[in-house]
Image (cartoon, rainbow, N blue to C red):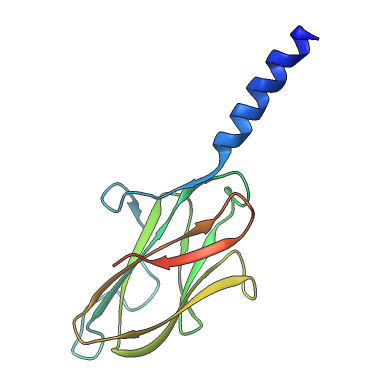
Length: 133
């Protein structure tokens, strides 16, 4: 019985460490260029950065797609980030594994604002996108 208990305890400890989501440090995240809206312009003056967190066993190997008002802008792996520019006003920023399976954040941006979001999946399997700045 004791021989079985130690491997089971180690397995439980290992798995519990894999199902937590750890925020990715903004400075350490690998930059992925967006497919569009790359430059700040007079009308696209709001800077939006989306960071993909890591650590979740669930969906950890999947690419996440970043959307601004349903327009796909980037694909992120764990510990990646993208920065794009958009207009002031109402926006839906979304992250998801594939179209139709995303989590959305509704927001209103003001002129020259700098915004940061973190996205990922909690250990329970619940996806998230949270504004942190």
